[in-house]
Picture (cartoon, rainbow, N blue to C red):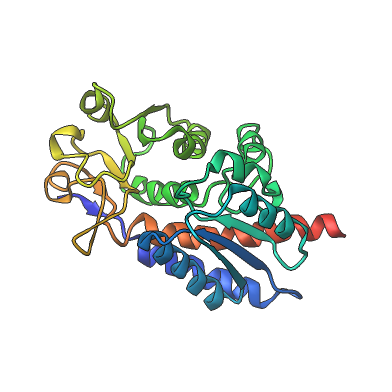
Length: 282
């Protein structure tokens, strides 16, 4: 049976460290979240982020909009938040219901882009320069590192990401930094099972419950399930846990895996953004 990677326990340790660091600061870091529409999952995620910020001593401000809000109205708010000295991180909760994230995200000041999706942050990351990386990507990498502690050292491994290009890009950059050759593929690809079965490290983020089954996984692989979909009141991942846990060497549970780690790494990013801006202000 696969080793379950407890993201919740690891996240709590990180959050304790952040709380201590925030408590030692002379001023308070701040996060602003823009939430559009009434998707229950998005509201749940934002509530978790708010709780984590308040627990850590980080100022939190939320801006709610209807699903029909004009894209320009969101961009106007982003530009306003860019100028506020008390806000060090800006997060637009994705997915947006009717607006184009490709038009909204570039409007965020890269120094305040705590989700790590801004093109400038991705370019800095590629060049190995100081940058804010995706909180999800950082959480995924922490979980992979934890799993690899239980695997033989010095073995060449390959990774496969099943996700959109927007989502996979920061993870792919971080994997390559760790000398892990990476293939990106989407759920609708004809050769999906063939590609996933070749992966020593398999990361799945499509939002399709049960997409990956045991016969699509390489024996002993590390499987990171980022997908979360609510089905009949229950949170489901993209991985069919019952069949995959018999084949994989390590597996993240849903819930309790990537989700808590993403929230913890968001706090890390807020503190990093705060530090970047503090140095510029001086």
